[in-house]
Length: 612
Ligand code: ADP
Image (cartoon, rainbow, N blue to C red; front, side, top):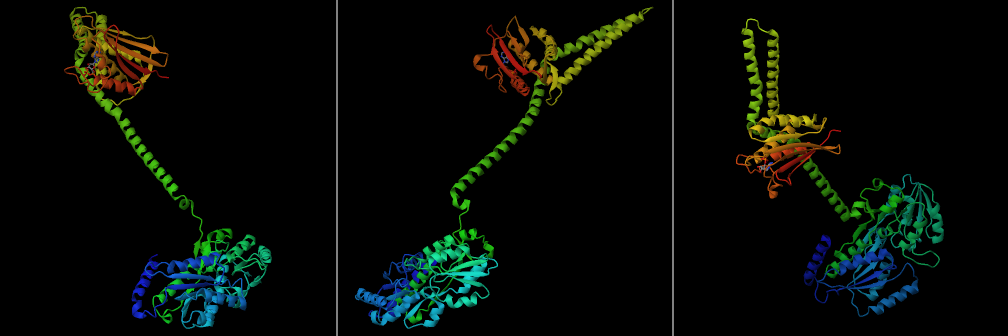
């Protein structure tokens, strides 16, 4: 594109300079007559013409009139025909001044040179599609320039060797050499270029015979196709159509010399690109129209390029690495990603987002896991604080539990002293007293042990425990406090053990919190202060513990809040007792809730799963 723009710029520049080079009378008409050698229906001439018109019609500042004539020399010939052609052109263009004639093909150039003096005297000729060997023979006539092709047969051989390893045979397919537009010089080059190989010459044969022969070629052979313009029996077609018919039957790869033959079934080779030839010729014509002397517009040479057909390479198992250096592969099947680019991008984006989401969720899970692992520790610490506070409240119970054995130890010790002071001490009685002292000491020791256990900051751990025993011990521990506060404390357990898996200290703490709360709630009522603890077994899978009291109950709008951390209605309250109780019960895979009893007072219930 950049190249085209710069050339357009160049042409425009030259057009502006033109008056300085040529006088108004000398200035050429802005018109080009394109004389074409062959049938325009085929892709080769179509592409060449497109390349030509792309440049000629590309300059908006200098419109060029383009006329086109198809001489059809591959299908028609002879002196009468060419004479009629000349008369036709003479008549047709009598009043149409022509600036430059573009002659495509060696035959066209030959005729144009012959007619020029008579039909278009002094009009420059730009040729295209003239092989270098033909150009060398012709020399450069005056007022002629053009595009010279270089497409030697050696290139076709190089390509054949690349696509067939161990090549020992080549089959030549095409119309007679003298009817060829591009490849007539191959005829002379074949003996040298194919030396040492077996040559199966099918040139000039009928299509039907060619199709038979190409189906049974030996293993290490390749077909070299020039161009066929007819079936040899009166039907004409473009060379690409003929190639398609041959490729249908061929049992070996077909090397070709023109790019439009690739899609028709050629595997490729050193090929000419017709659109490049067309645009080259048009550029030369434009320079002349712009005022340059034809002698100063040197002919350009176009080399055949190594170009191969991906589909055919797959068919014949040819790898890219075996192609000549600098080869290009065309008609490549797009990969799945290339074909479904947007769909693939969408799928990849979805996968990417999904992967991101999964990573995020895994990270969240990891954080939650950490938090969950951490939460029992936090709960243990908070529970410890709460137990210390409860222990403070229960100091009278503790003192009472210790005073009782200490008091009886003292009384027993004094009695023993008196017995020993007597003249005939009863040693058996002293022994009994000492046994009592020992028992009381153990009782006091047990109180201390339990208190230390209760106040120890221990991590949450579950044991196989009996819920009846936990309830019994806790209620017994609370009994002194209850009588001090004038509260009647009852416990209704079920017979036998209630086995659960749990942390005994923490479950004790739940019961303590609930009972102490009940006693607090009843502080203002003058009499009838009662707390009842009850256990029930629900169908053998869970145990339900209830602590109910005869206090004022919980205001209905606060029922949902009492378990919230720091919710308290007490002056000295911390508001963490019930929140800790709920955390402990949840950690035991249980459930806790509060309600008001129909007959008055609050009831707290919690359910724990029984051990299997
Ligand atoms: P605190 O005892 O420090 O206030 P809790 O979490 O143990 O903290 O109790 C929160 C609140 O729940 C208490 O302040 C009280 O208002 C209410 N509450 C708890 N138990 C009872 C009960 N048995 N009767 C009435 N209200 C209660």
